[in-house]
Length: 117
Image (cartoon, rainbow, N blue to C red):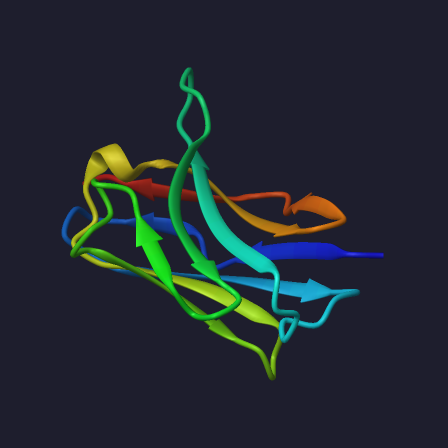
């Protein structure tokens, strides 16, 4: 069935960059009514939305992500990515890929991002 697998997390210094990827199986990204999102959850805090891209290519970002992060999708590869620039220590969290369609809501296992000197 539908599976999402995140990759690309790791340790970076403040001001550095990371590119996260989410590979999907069991679904085709060309579906019109589809929302692909990145969420994050820091220790002791609730999960929060980072960015979303619709089936039509429209994007929205949390305030903390605007101007620093960019979400994109590649329908041919069935992947969604999150380019993260100018990273700050407060960006440290587990980042999750989410797929929402009319019949279901799917999550990846998460990938750890640590921003520290």
